[in-house]
Length: 160
Image (tube, rainbow, N blue to C red; front, side, top):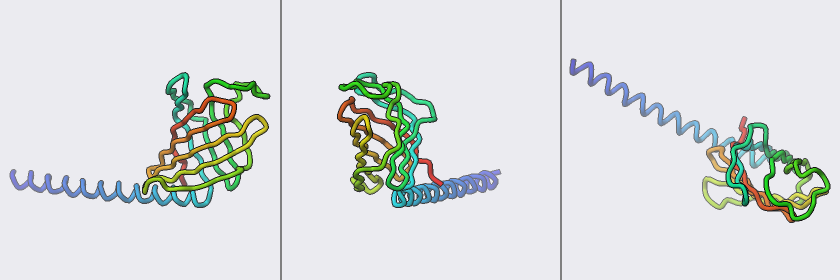
């Protein structure tokens, strides 16, 4: 009986080690995929929540995203906040556009984080996006505008 318990305990211990090794391998694959996506400028972030200055944090539906494709930024994000100048389009339009990037800089504030500073000019406004992408595949997006309150989003990178 003792021998059986010892064998089972040893087996569980080995399974635990294999699971830790598998998790480490998955983390490494995700890290590489994030780095490759940033290097290729082929990145899509599916947004899960937003934080506003006036209305707090809200969960959003799964169809909102931010996509970096070469020198183009495609933004399909909701907006809740104060507009300081009446937009030409409907205010319900949100942050929805596809435009060429005016300026993009990449930095590494931490070892596990890449920061993209992106400037985009649309017919309506000029936007500054700060996109923090972590090795885990999580991402934070902050959007500042000349004519609107700032807003931020959290989401997940869609990796191959």
